[in-house]
Structure formats: structure tokens, C-alpha cells
Image (cartoon, rainbow, N blue to C red; front, side, top):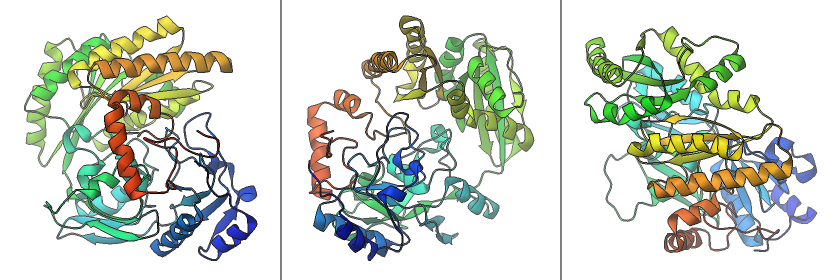
Amino acid sequence: MEYTKLTPELTAELSRLAAEVIPAAEIHDDFCHDELAGLRCRPEALVRARSTAEVSAVMRFAFTHHIPVTPRGQGTGLVGGAVARAGGIMLDLSKMNRVLEIDEENLTLTLEPGVLLMEIAALVEPLGLFYPPDPGEKSATIGGNISTNAGGMRAVKYGVTRDYVRGLEVVLADGRVIELGGKVVKNSSGYSLLNLIVGSEGTLGIVTRATLRLIPLPRRAISLLVPFPTLAQAIETVPLIIKSKSVPTAVEFMERSVILAAEEFLGRSYPDKSSDAYLLLTFDGNSTGEIEAAYDNVARICIDNGALDVLISNTPERNESIWKARGAFLEAIKSSTTEMDECDVVVPRRRVADFIKFSASLEEKHRIRIRSFGHAGDGNLHIYVLRDELDEAAWKRTLGAVFQELYDKAREFGGQVSGEHGIGFVKQPYLAESLGPDLIELMAGIKKVFDPTGILNPGKVCSVSGRDGQ
């Protein structure tokens, strides 16, 4: 698809609509990529929006002149979703970062999309309230979390971002502003357009305000670090834990190699690193007795299935130490190699062990390092392929072969190509293979209704377009 190029005259017109417009030559390199290695594209103008009115004016301008627009938060995505593949305007929403209301009666929080995830916890937890979605990247914006339907470590008990979005203000491709949902708990009023926007990665509309559901903050939390002789034994124990009546808040798996990388990255020791594999579980509740009953039951299940020990972390300091290391896994792996790419798949929980075994077999087959960790409780696995010293041609060839096998196996197991990081640019071919032509056609039709001229984040999710034909 061909788009209009931003001429100096059009850039001057754009500058009259928004307070801060930065031309291409002055745009910092940070805005030319996200966390996906190897994909860099420079927008023709960067607009730092401060209000819904500005976003609406920019979209009316872009719609009139057929100029592509790429919305962006903090740029922490891993699939190229916030990269301006088609040039045009990059719309930076990180300055729209006001908290508008905390409604303690209706248990809702209303805020702009640029508020950081870490700021939400700091704001609501002193009031005894809780926003459960817990993606690993705490510096991401809530707008980015909504765009990818982010999940995180607490999803096994509490669900994902979509489960906590009550209302949205959205600017459409032509600049119209619509309101979806609200503070109501139940709503059967027509199609759920709200849920279409959540997870749409900025391809259907731009979120400029969100109303989030809160719940009462659990009073206590205890973590268990459970070493196993092998990763297979650890993973095979997870379905037994989930089937029990003692459902943890989080169930994570990790290997010794990842723990050692995190130790080196953080410069601090992990509580235990003697075993090859671990489960990390958290339980929360409102009383010590309630939590102890839950974790006693799970501890017995683990020991009965080969666990070497059950290490109880029952103080805030110990919990913080363990989970800080878990939160550093991604950066630790990244720092240990020259380049890496991630396969973020989700499979049925009963196939997690089989998938991890399969991914480990690819290390020897393709002679490349592969590291993994993930949310064993909900089947969302993060498989990292490391470049190390491979040259560019060998890296691309090997990465493509490994990814194809991983996504093919996920499909064979009844899984999908993304558990929480979205599709963006890089995963489109795998999504097409996974869903098939009928569902891709339906998704493209929805895109056409919301964005008839294809200017909203083009070349992402289910369509490929742009000046370079990609």
C-alpha cells in the first residue's frame, strides 16, 4: 500500500495541531526500534501527544492525507509492534500519564495510557487495593499492556489484562472519539467492541483513557522455591498442582543456567542453585492459616513427585529477593549473548513438559544455545534462541529453522503463537499458519471496518503493508 510522504508543508501543518512535533532528522534512535533485535525504521515525524484532543486532531490529519500512524508507549515490546514500518507519524503516548480517578466504591482506576505499570501498584496498594496483571516489564505503559493483552506471572489465578479493563476511550482512524464500556460490572449490550480493542496492538484504534477494575489487596503472600532433579519432573508436577484445590497465584519454572545468568547480571546470590530445575510458586490470601493450608498441600504434591526440597519464603525481604531474580531473567539472558530472539508460545498445560523437552532437543540439532523459562501454570512459555558468535547469514538461517519447528510443534499440541507479547510485525507468518485463511480473513475484515484506509499501525498483526511492500 502506498502512503503520502510527510513533506515540509505537511509537517508544518501537523505542527499546528500538536504542541510537540519532532521532524525525522531530530528523532532519537530509541524511537526507531523496540526490543526486537534487528528491526529499525525511522518515522518521518514524532508527535508527543498530551491530550485526547491532540490525538484526535493528528488522526483526522493523517486520515485526510493518507499518512500512516504508529502508536507507541515505552517501546518495551518484543515483536516490532511499535516500529514505524511504513514511516509516517509515530504517536508517542508516554506523556499522557495522568491518573484521573481512583473510585474506591466501584473499585476502579481511571487513567491515561502513558501511566507505567509500576506506578499503578505504588498508587493503589497503600489503599488496600490490587491490580493483578503482572507482566515482567514493570516499566511498560498500561496502554501497551492493553494493546497486547499482557498477562504475566499471576495469570494462573487472576487472569490477564482483558479481565481488568472495564472501559476505554478510543480514537478511531478518522479522528472520532468513542467510549467503550464503563464502570458497570455486567454488560450484554451488543458486540463487545471493548474486547476487540484490547489486544489489537493499535491497529483498530488508539486508547487515550482506560478504566481498570481493581480488587481488594490480599493481606499475605508466601513463595515456595522447589528444586527438582530434572526439568521434566518439575514441569510434569504442574498439572497435579493445578488440579488440586490449592491454586497458586503464580507457577513459574526455571533452569539452573538461567538462575546463574541472573546471579551474574544482578551481582547477588540466589537462595538455591544446586539443582537443575525449579518451580517457583506464590500463594496469597487474607490469613496465614489459609495460605499455609494451601502451600502444605502443594508441598506434599511436589515431594511425592520427586522434589528434592521445598524452600519456604515467608518474609517480604525473601520474597523480594527471589522475585527480583525472576524479573531479571530476560535481561540476564540478553546480556549473555550478542543477540537473541524469543518464541512466546502458549500450549495446553498438559503439553508444557512435552514442549520444553522438544525445545531442548533443538539445541543439539541446530547447534545453538536455547534458554527457557515461563508461566508453567498457564502454559505460556518463553523460549530464547541465542546468536552468540554466529555470523549474520547463519543466524538468520538457524533462527528461522528453530522458530518454524517451535511454532509447528505448538500448533501440533493445540497451542497458539503468542501467550502475551502479541503478534506485531515479526509473528504474522506464524499467526497465518496457526489460524488459517478463514480466521485471518475475518480479522482483516474487522481491521477494514475500524481502519478503512489502513493507516493505523500498518503491517502489523494480520496484514502486511507499507512503502517497501512489506
